[in-house]
Length: 67
Image (cartoon, rainbow, N blue to C red; front, side):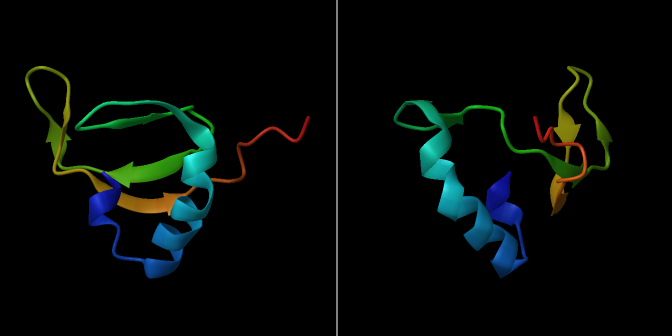
């Protein structure tokens, strides 16, 4: 999904911490620990429940725990 992020600052912020969150990798995917939240805009859901035309909007920091 992040391949469609048009905001360069958001892409750089993500890249700066993403390598610290790697859980596993395959030849096609990098799986991260779910420590980052973002808001995604999408057209609708497909019949099998996937997002159609997802688009990154912003990172969400207000719901992160400070404990």
